[in-house]
Amino acid sequence: MKPIFYLLIVVIFIIFIVLRYGRKGRRFPWYEFYSRGKREGFTFREIRFLKKIAIQNKLEKPQSIFWSTKQLDRCLRPAIRRIEADENMSEAEKLAMITKLLELRKKAEFNLPKYKKRIRDTHALMPRQKLVIRNKEYGTYLSWVIEINRRYLVISQPMGHPGWKSLNWKGHKINVYFWRVDDAGYSFESKVLEQISHEEYPLLYISHSTKLERTQKRKSVRVETNIRVKFYPVSYSNVDGVSKPYISKRGHTGKIIDLSESGCCMIAGRGMKKNDRLKLDFFITEEKRIIALGIIVGVSKTSDERVKKYHIMFIRISPIARNNILLYVYNIFGEREDLEKKKRPTIRPSTTQAVKK
Image (tube, rainbow, N blue to C red; front, top):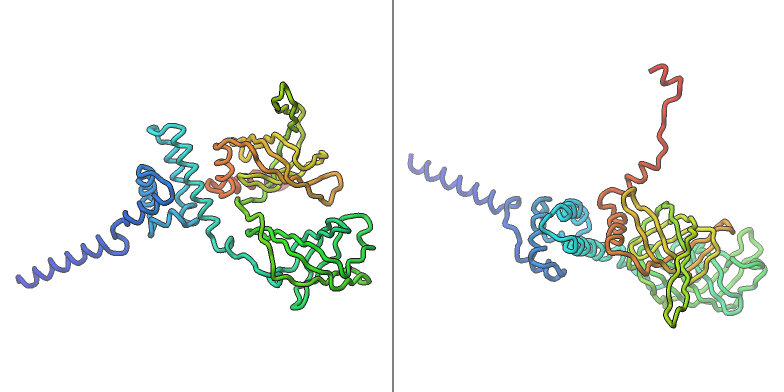
């Protein structure tokens, strides 16, 4: 009887060990978690808080909260709600903690492989890639990639100025600039090898390049939007040697078509130019209002001659507003979906259907 009793005790002990230290019950990797948290700039108090969040969300690998966009998106909503409800934290501490978490989310985003895949030569370009063509004699034009041949690139004949169809590009040296989505801007030099102007769609054959210069690497994530914005032109006057801003009391209406915490792209009909400054006032949700000072860093055309796209960089925006934009961009609280649902028209039954019911 005793051997069976001892065997039962051993089995129970083994089961306890497996449950306690097995895959689901293994000890928390406190050293890896705390050391990674310190490297990311968090205090011990903040790391303890993140540890609670990781345990609460049952992360299989708790330290992945510091680098995984998937795990961060899963944890940020409960984390921010707990921070905002904590009565022991001051408003400044809450803001600092939320800012750190969102900076961590941004860092994790730009560590994704899709942001690391740069291209080395023009053979990697894709059809329909938009190009900006610059030539000393002719000026600046727009074009699109039509085909990538082993020996040359086929692009549409550059357009954008009156008389573009009659220009002779063959033999001209050109500078080409393009923006690659989720990557950066690139530029290279090329030469027009051939011009096909007698076809329905005029084309240029240009030489390939293995010397791509990578510029303007993306530093913030932009999302497409459809947000109404009021903007007020800002002018400066010199009073006793001091430059003072004057914000126009007359506002104008535009539409923000993409947004990030560092700037936006706005469509508006008012004739503004590069380096003009604006006060922007808009809502990203019904409760969250954004007020920012921006500067126009670029102007581009649209299909409507009366309307232009204004590429705006924020030069003054509050930390709270910046955080709210980041929460919207990463859709932590599902605000973008909520906004889309509210924009959808409500389908009401017809009078006949209502009577039948």
